[in-house]
Length: 196
Length: 318
Image 1: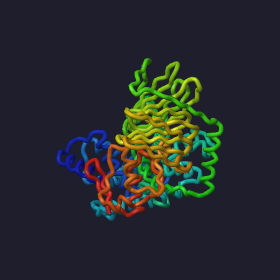
Image 2: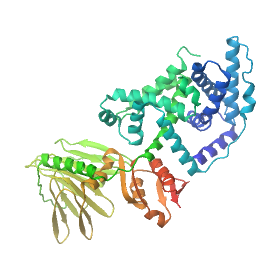
Image 3: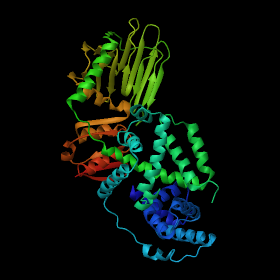
């Protein structure tokens, strides 16, 4: 999979072309979302009110999306973090807060670091471990629904029958589970999860 | 910022994603989702983020424990099978049918593509379930009920009618006449009939001679041009072989070669094993018919094999 993406990416880079919707989506999933842990770490360092951080994260994504529609930022990492810094500065200005050390540690985040790619087998193993760890952190009922649906492969109706709940309730658990899993899998820092 | 908070948008996106995860998701539903996504980039971004994470969880299928062949479990399955068979009673449908059949009434054609799965209820109430890459034709008239299996695999649950036998035809040289519940699989080289419940008769009509075999529940007959072999399957094996009816492939001491050829029936992307040693390795586990990725992960994680992608092939090697 990675190879397909890379060649696609290179072609786009050469052309400097505006991105089509599916390309934009693929770029977002492959390049932006994996940076979420770093992004969250940055936001946490620089924003006092923890409850606003998920909103800020989505605002950063929105700005990244809008900008990427015009031109593909290469590489993604400094681009995303610069947008995050600018957002924080905008917000601080708007709220008339004097930043003492906000955005000061941006440089320490090592903007352009390119991590070496581990081999595919190691990725698969890590991914499973990560997924399992994420599952374990879901609330019990929600976890049960996700396990039956994803691990056991039961249909939604079968899950509802097995647990003796309605299909709508299954959907609700799935919806909550999907949000929690997105936070866990995209790498939200630990403390933030507890504060919610 | 919009008036709706990003977390409300995220909640909405999650509800969409959760409702899409449904068997009866329709074109109309998809149109509504597309419209919601087109409303604002914030909707798209929130949805993509959740969808990307949710798609990753497909790999969790690789964690599925192989089912234990414990006595209790097998016993329960046996009892269920016995009870079902008992309720339905023993039905013997014996029929004879000329090779050059001609249908008097119009036939209805049913088909599935690679990876497809379809359930049909015929006008007489009988159930027919088509597995991947399957084509069949059905004709129900006053005197006879007939299904011709042109290719693939199908599960039949026949509503018994004494005065109107149900005949299934597969291939030019084999004529099969069955009742109650059974599975028929037709490959290029052979025909496989497995009786789940009730009783049935399989007839083979050749140029010079014909042969008839009566089947009992659990009997499996494999017929090719030269010969017919009969084996008896336990109820546990039967329900494993019917896993596809729930979009599952269940492997229990299955060689990697057999598992791969099963999985390939459901996929345009084909798995290939180059090493004969690897081909002989055996595995246990349950996989979604459409989830090659989970299987590939399991071979990497559990068996420590290497996987490389070459075009539309995935090569598994030592």
